[in-house]
Length: 93
Image 1: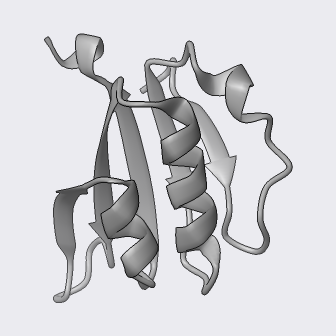
Image 2 (image 1 turned 120 degrees about the vertical axis):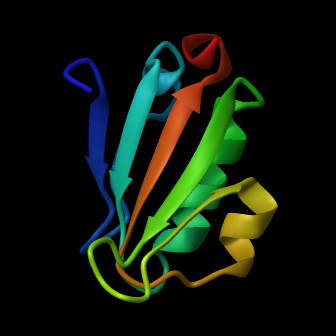
């Protein structure tokens, strides 16, 4: 993960330029507030279909959950404390 790009959407919507991330092979988004899910869904949609998206909720807690999602799933959820990982499909091969 030393080559991953990190974005914080924890306190507010980031001012990130979506296009600047299209070449990143790994992106980690720190979320955990109401409203972050819709920004993340827009971000995932803007990047296109080249990424797989993994939601990591409540890490280290008894309610920990890790699952794969797409933009529609993200927008429909208001996740608790979470990290969203985007990994280019060709990086997983």
